[in-house]
Length: 421
Image (cartoon, rainbow, N blue to C red; front, side, top):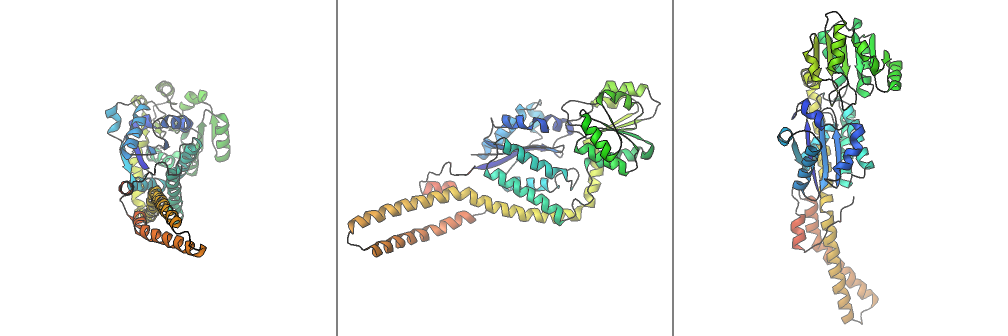
């Protein structure tokens, strides 16, 4: 059994590439069904920072290639437009990477809480699709435990920023007087909720929440303030908006050039700040060509995120120690899991040989008493156990090296299909 990861993230690919690979929550079930055509077991983790495929199969090279083929076949990018951004990880590197993700160290915003829930939801979705085997389940559950430890035992997430709060901070850099600014937030999901909450805490009083689902917008504004609006009212609402933050879960743009152009013609010559923090992007990029419209996407918020990282350097080193402990624990389990079929096969073959020779010998010694037969049985079992003890202990403890194939050939074992699912 081999595990492999193929993915792209905010460090390897710009937003224009990430959005083409991104898999939204409403597409996840269908995407897992498609992934099953490429690999027997796999989990898809797709966030605004990354799209990653964790998969299990018989050979590392085959699994990695299958994951890459899945990404290529499900995007609209040419091979050279995607492959240059993909990273491949396996073994300890894969485990360490996933643990860093769940602990918030691999995010644009260090210590963010949202990613822990996203990892959990990815595992649950793959479980429902029947795509999870024991190794994938154990690794993801261990990663989630590591993420909880990092947040409980360190201050990595204390007063942590979110992409939504960074977007509001960016808007404040440009329009300091937020109390008199009208803010439109498109999207009533978790990112929209956070944006409304942060804007309200900074003194914004003119908040409008636009959502395709009217009930969600009504519920959100009733809880946190502001007022709801429908997508049909968006163009009119834009006419006097200072700041627009888009974070809707939509595969298509929800803010188009035509809408913004029409709104800008009906207002005085003051600017509109548009912050698109969705993945895929919610805003047509050509909007930035309209006079007095300033468009920023999620990658444009890097400077603020980097400053946040520097403030948390001390916490990062503590979290890395936790990750090291958890990775060591997981790799010990993985080593045992990997060699378990070989150990079972060795023991089964040894017992078959022992019992055959024992029974053959008893037929030649019919005069032995029951006690004598039992003594010989215990003696032969003890000899086999002592002979197998050292090779089995070595298999269990050999770090970084898998001798299973060599041992299988040495003992002429057949241990295919022994792993649990």
